[in-house]
Image: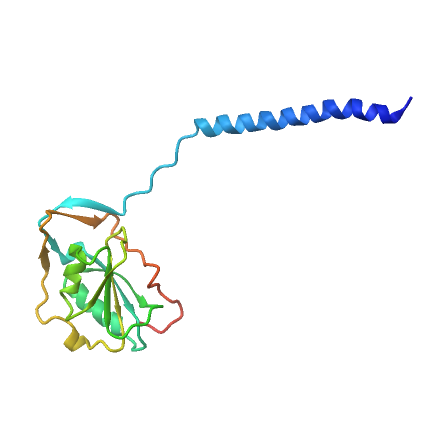
Length: 186
């Protein structure tokens, strides 16, 4: 008997069985995936609420030290906390600046405008963040005595009649200003 002739006779049925096994596994996986429930949508980062006035208690601020002067961000956070703001993160920033910068969803957002009204001539920037928190980055050139408004407001009117408020109350650091572990305290 010639053994070369026995090989092709067995290889075709074995190949066919392997391919049918792969096909059955693919059909099973596809069927299981088709019947699986879709993942739950992520929770909203903010909730649109009807309101005509935004108060400091509805605004979450994160304060970052963008300079080398120790304690500056902490002193500003204390002032904002005393004014009723919800203070989230107080930390050093990877972004170095000279004076003060306020970053929020949009430059005309009520929460950004309310925070900006607490400072004299701040630089205001928008990054489109969804959670509507506001970041304050302060540098060595900011004089806390001259740079903060003498009589800051505790609320601001909302002409549109609605505003987006954080859904969870827990702020998230942005990509531009993240805490740097191991740096000296802010």
